[in-house]
Image (cartoon, rainbow, N blue to C red; front, top):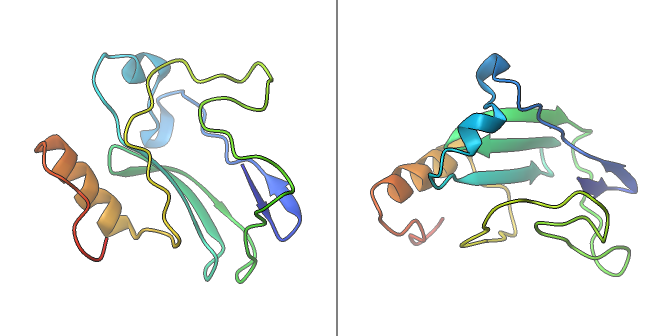
Length: 123
């Protein structure tokens, strides 16, 4: 979820196997997966990618900034003491100051599969 210009919206992705989305069973296969959540302020497009493929998107008005700072803490893997906990291992978390392009996300996934670093200059 993101607070964009004072409006909090969550981009939910059903784990139902439809329209290219994974199932819960597919995510629990014991293999590492590459998950990317991105928001492009210029286009207003909020997206979620799994293993280099877009599995969800939400169109918001263009030009609206993400609200950050003292309004709410950032949680990775848990939602502020609620029951929405991530069951698994989070490794190599990176936060960028701009939205990654689809090409960069796919390149990252290709490099991960090849056991190579995806922190190339300019990415």
